[in-house]
Image 1 (cartoon, rainbow, N blue to C red):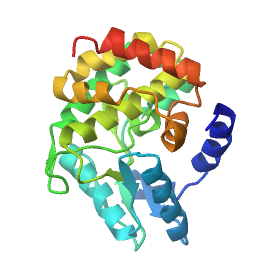
Image 2 (image 1 turned 45 degrees about the horizontal axis):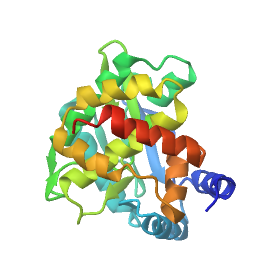
Image 3 (image 1 turned 60 degrees about the horizontal axis):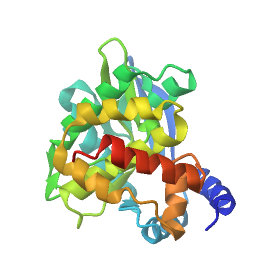
Length: 257
Protein backbone atom coordinates (compact mmCIF):
# COMPACT_ATOMS: atom_id res chain seq x y z
CA UNK A 1 0.00 0.00 0.00
CA UNK A 2 1.67 3.27 -1.11
CA UNK A 3 2.04 6.32 1.12
CA UNK A 4 -0.70 8.37 -0.58
CA UNK A 5 -3.29 5.60 -0.31
CA UNK A 6 -2.28 4.97 3.31
CA UNK A 7 -2.85 8.65 4.04
CA UNK A 8 -6.36 8.66 2.55
CA UNK A 9 -7.52 5.38 4.10
CA UNK A 10 -5.94 6.24 7.42
CA UNK A 11 -7.80 9.52 7.70
CA UNK A 12 -11.09 7.72 7.07
CA UNK A 13 -10.26 5.34 9.92
CA UNK A 14 -9.24 8.17 12.24
CA UNK A 15 -12.53 9.97 11.58
CA UNK A 16 -14.59 7.13 13.09
CA UNK A 17 -15.53 7.61 16.75
CA UNK A 18 -17.67 5.01 18.52
CA UNK A 19 -17.70 6.81 21.89
CA UNK A 20 -18.41 10.43 22.80
CA UNK A 21 -17.20 12.42 25.81
CA UNK A 22 -18.89 15.44 27.39
CA UNK A 23 -18.18 17.44 30.58
CA UNK A 24 -20.57 16.78 33.45
CA UNK A 25 -20.60 17.88 37.09
CA UNK A 26 -22.04 15.50 39.70
CA UNK A 27 -22.50 16.59 43.34
CA UNK A 28 -20.18 19.52 42.73
CA UNK A 29 -17.43 17.30 41.32
CA UNK A 30 -16.23 18.13 37.81
CA UNK A 31 -15.90 15.13 35.55
CA UNK A 32 -16.49 13.54 32.17
CA UNK A 33 -19.37 11.44 30.92
CA UNK A 34 -18.26 8.94 28.31
CA UNK A 35 -20.83 6.90 26.43
CA UNK A 36 -21.12 4.54 23.48
CA UNK A 37 -22.93 5.96 20.44
CA UNK A 38 -26.06 4.12 19.38
CA UNK A 39 -25.76 1.97 16.26
CA UNK A 40 -22.01 1.39 16.44
CA UNK A 41 -22.11 -2.43 16.21
CA UNK A 42 -21.29 -2.57 12.49
CA UNK A 43 -18.57 0.07 12.84
CA UNK A 44 -16.93 -1.82 15.69
CA UNK A 45 -17.16 -5.07 13.76
CA UNK A 46 -15.47 -3.53 10.73
CA UNK A 47 -12.91 -1.88 12.99
CA UNK A 48 -12.01 -5.21 14.55
CA UNK A 49 -11.59 -6.75 11.08
CA UNK A 50 -9.11 -3.99 10.23
CA UNK A 51 -7.31 -4.42 13.55
CA UNK A 52 -6.95 -8.14 12.88
CA UNK A 53 -5.78 -7.67 9.28
CA UNK A 54 -3.23 -5.10 10.42
CA UNK A 55 -1.89 -7.34 13.21
CA UNK A 56 -2.58 -4.61 15.71
CA UNK A 57 -2.59 -6.88 18.81
CA UNK A 58 -5.69 -5.06 20.13
CA UNK A 59 -9.46 -5.22 19.66
CA UNK A 60 -12.45 -2.99 20.32
CA UNK A 61 -15.28 -4.05 22.64
CA UNK A 62 -18.40 -5.16 20.72
CA UNK A 63 -20.25 -5.40 24.03
CA UNK A 64 -20.93 -2.00 25.58
CA UNK A 65 -21.13 -3.30 29.16
CA UNK A 66 -17.81 -5.13 28.80
CA UNK A 67 -16.18 -1.92 27.57
CA UNK A 68 -17.56 0.12 30.49
CA UNK A 69 -16.42 -2.57 32.94
CA UNK A 70 -12.90 -2.50 31.51
CA UNK A 71 -12.64 1.30 31.63
CA UNK A 72 -13.77 1.45 35.26
CA UNK A 73 -11.53 -1.47 36.20
CA UNK A 74 -8.50 0.29 34.70
CA UNK A 75 -9.16 3.57 36.50
CA UNK A 76 -9.55 1.75 39.81
CA UNK A 77 -6.52 -0.45 39.19
CA UNK A 78 -4.20 2.45 38.39
CA UNK A 79 -5.55 5.15 40.69
CA UNK A 80 -7.54 3.44 43.44
CA UNK A 81 -9.73 5.80 45.47
CA UNK A 82 -7.95 8.92 44.19
CA UNK A 83 -10.18 9.05 41.12
CA UNK A 84 -13.95 8.53 41.33
CA UNK A 85 -15.35 6.46 38.49
CA UNK A 86 -18.69 4.66 38.13
CA UNK A 87 -21.26 3.52 35.59
CA UNK A 88 -23.88 5.98 34.41
CA UNK A 89 -26.88 4.79 32.46
CA UNK A 90 -26.82 1.75 30.20
CA UNK A 91 -24.14 2.85 27.77
CA UNK A 92 -21.45 4.77 29.63
CA UNK A 93 -19.65 5.87 32.75
CA UNK A 94 -18.62 9.00 34.61
CA UNK A 95 -15.06 9.70 35.72
CA UNK A 96 -13.73 12.51 37.86
CA UNK A 97 -11.65 15.07 35.96
CA UNK A 98 -7.93 14.45 36.33
CA UNK A 99 -5.33 17.21 36.61
CA UNK A 100 -3.22 18.42 33.71
CA UNK A 101 -3.48 18.27 29.94
CA UNK A 102 -2.70 15.57 27.43
CA UNK A 103 0.79 15.36 25.97
CA UNK A 104 -0.84 16.00 22.60
CA UNK A 105 -2.15 19.34 23.92
CA UNK A 106 1.24 20.24 25.37
CA UNK A 107 2.77 19.42 21.99
CA UNK A 108 0.27 21.62 20.14
CA UNK A 109 1.24 24.50 22.43
CA UNK A 110 4.93 23.91 21.74
CA UNK A 111 5.62 22.95 25.36
CA UNK A 112 6.29 19.21 25.30
CA UNK A 113 9.36 18.83 27.53
CA UNK A 114 11.93 16.35 28.72
CA UNK A 115 10.34 16.46 32.20
CA UNK A 116 7.08 15.25 30.68
CA UNK A 117 8.86 12.34 28.99
CA UNK A 118 10.49 11.38 32.27
CA UNK A 119 7.12 11.47 34.04
CA UNK A 120 5.51 9.44 31.25
CA UNK A 121 8.22 6.78 31.47
CA UNK A 122 7.69 6.45 35.23
CA UNK A 123 3.93 6.19 34.77
CA UNK A 124 4.23 3.51 32.08
CA UNK A 125 6.63 1.57 34.31
CA UNK A 126 4.32 1.79 37.32
CA UNK A 127 1.24 0.85 35.29
CA UNK A 128 3.03 -2.14 33.76
CA UNK A 129 3.80 -3.53 37.23
CA UNK A 130 0.09 -3.71 38.04
CA UNK A 131 -1.65 -7.08 37.74
CA UNK A 132 -5.20 -7.74 36.62
CA UNK A 133 -7.43 -10.79 36.45
CA UNK A 134 -8.27 -9.93 32.84
CA UNK A 135 -4.78 -11.08 31.78
CA UNK A 136 -2.47 -13.88 32.94
CA UNK A 137 0.16 -11.35 33.90
CA UNK A 138 0.79 -7.62 34.02
CA UNK A 139 -1.64 -4.95 32.86
CA UNK A 140 -1.39 -3.16 29.51
CA UNK A 141 -3.22 -0.21 27.98
CA UNK A 142 -3.66 -1.00 24.28
CA UNK A 143 -3.68 2.53 22.82
CA UNK A 144 -1.00 4.65 24.48
CA UNK A 145 -0.73 7.58 22.09
CA UNK A 146 -0.01 11.15 23.19
CA UNK A 147 -3.67 12.13 23.62
CA UNK A 148 -4.13 9.31 26.15
CA UNK A 149 -1.36 10.47 28.47
CA UNK A 150 -2.00 13.46 30.74
CA UNK A 151 0.68 15.54 32.44
CA UNK A 152 0.12 17.71 35.51
CA UNK A 153 2.91 20.30 35.94
CA UNK A 154 1.98 20.98 39.57
CA UNK A 155 2.68 17.42 40.71
CA UNK A 156 5.04 16.62 37.78
CA UNK A 157 2.99 13.46 37.30
CA UNK A 158 1.67 11.70 34.20
CA UNK A 159 -1.61 9.77 34.02
CA UNK A 160 -2.93 7.21 31.54
CA UNK A 161 -6.55 7.55 30.39
CA UNK A 162 -9.02 6.23 27.78
CA UNK A 163 -9.10 2.45 27.96
CA UNK A 164 -11.27 1.82 24.90
CA UNK A 165 -9.42 -1.21 23.55
CA UNK A 166 -7.74 -4.26 25.05
CA UNK A 167 -4.83 -6.44 23.98
CA UNK A 168 -5.33 -9.99 22.78
CA UNK A 169 -5.33 -12.27 25.80
CA UNK A 170 -3.05 -14.84 24.14
CA UNK A 171 -0.12 -12.41 24.06
CA UNK A 172 2.53 -12.54 26.76
CA UNK A 173 2.87 -9.69 29.25
CA UNK A 174 6.06 -8.50 27.52
CA UNK A 175 4.41 -8.56 24.08
CA UNK A 176 1.44 -6.51 25.26
CA UNK A 177 3.49 -3.98 27.19
CA UNK A 178 6.03 -3.61 24.37
CA UNK A 179 3.09 -2.81 22.09
CA UNK A 180 2.17 0.04 24.45
CA UNK A 181 5.69 1.41 24.04
CA UNK A 182 5.54 0.97 20.27
CA UNK A 183 2.34 3.00 19.95
CA UNK A 184 3.80 5.76 22.12
CA UNK A 185 7.10 6.00 20.27
CA UNK A 186 5.45 5.95 16.82
CA UNK A 187 3.27 8.89 17.85
CA UNK A 188 6.23 10.88 19.18
CA UNK A 189 8.42 9.98 16.20
CA UNK A 190 5.76 11.15 13.77
CA UNK A 191 4.71 14.34 15.54
CA UNK A 192 7.68 15.78 17.42
CA UNK A 193 10.56 17.50 15.68
CA UNK A 194 12.79 16.80 18.67
CA UNK A 195 11.80 13.11 18.93
CA UNK A 196 15.48 12.09 19.06
CA UNK A 197 15.87 14.17 22.22
CA UNK A 198 12.65 13.05 23.91
CA UNK A 199 12.61 9.28 23.40
CA UNK A 200 15.90 8.46 25.21
CA UNK A 201 14.55 10.19 28.33
CA UNK A 202 11.35 8.15 28.14
CA UNK A 203 13.28 4.87 27.75
CA UNK A 204 15.67 5.71 30.58
CA UNK A 205 12.76 6.50 32.88
CA UNK A 206 10.82 3.39 31.88
CA UNK A 207 13.83 1.07 32.29
CA UNK A 208 12.28 -2.39 32.00
CA UNK A 209 14.76 -4.41 29.89
CA UNK A 210 12.54 -7.43 29.16
CA UNK A 211 9.79 -5.29 27.70
CA UNK A 212 12.24 -3.09 25.80
CA UNK A 213 13.89 -6.17 24.33
CA UNK A 214 10.49 -7.24 23.00
CA UNK A 215 9.94 -3.72 21.67
CA UNK A 216 13.15 -3.99 19.69
CA UNK A 217 11.75 -7.09 17.96
CA UNK A 218 8.74 -5.03 16.86
CA UNK A 219 10.85 -2.29 15.29
CA UNK A 220 10.77 -3.40 11.69
CA UNK A 221 8.63 -1.31 9.33
CA UNK A 222 5.93 -3.65 7.96
CA UNK A 223 4.03 -3.84 4.68
CA UNK A 224 0.37 -4.12 3.68
CA UNK A 225 -2.38 -3.53 6.21
CA UNK A 226 0.08 -3.34 9.08
CA UNK A 227 1.95 -0.55 7.27
CA UNK A 228 -1.36 1.33 7.10
CA UNK A 229 -1.76 0.92 10.86
CA UNK A 230 1.76 2.28 11.36
CA UNK A 231 0.88 5.21 9.09
CA UNK A 232 -2.06 6.20 11.31
CA UNK A 233 0.11 5.86 14.42
CA UNK A 234 3.10 7.82 13.08
CA UNK A 235 1.19 10.81 11.69
CA UNK A 236 1.65 9.52 8.14
CA UNK A 237 5.42 9.75 7.95
CA UNK A 238 6.69 8.79 4.52
CA UNK A 239 8.24 5.35 4.26
CA UNK A 240 11.84 6.69 3.87
CA UNK A 241 11.39 8.92 6.94
CA UNK A 242 9.91 6.11 9.00
CA UNK A 243 12.63 3.65 7.99
CA UNK A 244 15.33 6.17 8.93
CA UNK A 245 13.85 7.03 12.30
CA UNK A 246 13.11 3.44 13.31
CA UNK A 247 16.69 2.48 12.40
CA UNK A 248 17.95 5.33 14.56
CA UNK A 249 15.85 4.20 17.52
CA UNK A 250 17.10 0.63 17.21
CA UNK A 251 20.79 1.49 16.92
CA UNK A 252 21.03 4.56 19.15
CA UNK A 253 18.45 4.06 21.91
CA UNK A 254 18.01 0.28 22.19
CA UNK A 255 21.35 -1.11 21.04
CA UNK A 256 22.31 -2.08 24.62
CA UNK A 257 19.13 -4.11 25.19
